[in-house]
Structure formats: C-alpha cells, structure tokens
Length: 285
Ligand SMILES: [Fe+2]
Image (cartoon, rainbow, N blue to C red):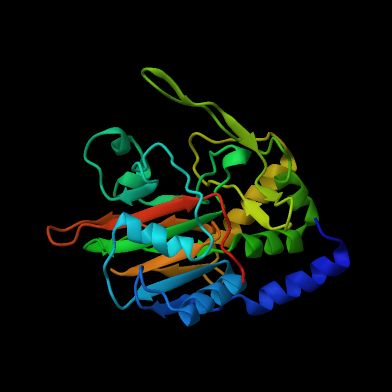
C-alpha cells in the first residue's frame, strides 16, 4: 500500500471525516428518477466521508429500472448478474417461500452476520458498490449495522500492522464450491480479505463472519486478526452505524461491511428491498 507518511495523513483525514452519528449519512432527494445535481453532489460528498450514504426519496416511486437509473448517476453501470438476481441484475430481497432463492439466508427473515457483498466472487467480478433500496419494511426488525471497510482497516492496522499482512494473504479466506444435487454451481474461491485497486489504490474488503462454508488460512496471525475484527464489529461504542431503512430510503455504498437483524413480516408489512451490485465504485466527483 502507500508509504508510512502518506498513510498517516490519509488515516488522520479518514478518521476525522467519518460520521459519528448515522444521521450524518442521510441525504434527501427528489426520487430515484429525479436526483438534482446538488443532491447528487451531496451524496457523493457523504460517500467521500464514509464510503456510503443513505438517501431518502420525497417521491417514493421505485422499480428495478428506477434503481438502475439512480445508480447510473453515480457511475454504477456494470451490474453483477448473480444467481438469484432477475434478468436485469437487480435482486428483490424478500422472504422466498420456495424456488432457488429459498435456500439462501438473504431471502429468509433470519439475521445475516457481518459480511461484504460478493465475498464469494472471483477477483475479476469483485463487487465494488451496492445500492439497497427499501420498498417496504417488515412489521418489526430488519435493521442494518454498517461499517466502512477503510475504518475497519485503520483500526486493525492501529492494533498491529501484522494483522493487515495476514488479511492480505492470497490464501486467507476460501469459500468452498457451491454445489447442489446436479453438481457444481460455483467453484471454490480463494483470496485475501484486503486488496487494493490497481489504479486508485482503493481498499477492497472481502469478508464473511459466517461460521459455516468459510475456510480460513490455518495461521495464528489470521486467527488473531479475525478476533480483532470481531471485537471492532461488536463494539457498541465503536464506529459501527445502525439504521433501519424505511420505505423510499436506500443505501448507496462502496461495499461496506454490514449485517442485518432478523425480522417479522406482517400481513400489511412484508419487507421488500431491491439490491443491485456493481463492479464499479461510486464516482467520487
Ligand atoms: Fe449484503
């Protein structure tokens, strides 16, 4: 990564600008299809501070095409068409009682542990940004906790730079192949937790706290690093921000660490979120 002097400077400015309260992430906009220049600039400025922003639409109209249009205003155009997405690459996150999606936790009402999106993607299909738009909330629950990966990086490096070295190892985290009765859906994927964009040096984080289906490198420093990260993520007084998206609100983020609490749908309140994942990062200016 960068040399020590420039790292120190970068670290200082990142910590100073990072929001202390989740409300600092909020930006009001006209709607998914009507974002003014000033609103777009405010979202980008918020993303420069935190690698994420939460927008709130005055006009609640939302469909998958509107989500794509909104995202394209931030340079997010290359969609990750993964297994459970619709043909246009936008997923509908809701409780799936049957079908291919029902085997996956995101399409249930269960809690989701800390992760970055697409941690099982190969390097050439790295998910760099995500838009998560809430159409409807559940009766109760479904709150997200959020942490900028750059802040996680800094706090780990503050503890011990060797933790970063361990997490940069190309064999640090392996996701075994995804198979079903018919055979292999996706081969095993092995890679580091932290990597850096070749052009900008931007930090990319690949992580899942799932106990099942993750194989960690058998190495003491890797174990120490994972425990340190777990501590940071569990710290009630730390930098983790918590928010429950309401209808017409959404998160636009450079694939930050996040989790989700479990939720309960009611007859009038069935949780529905659109999610789009991109191979691009949010334009910074
Ligand atoms: Fe996610």
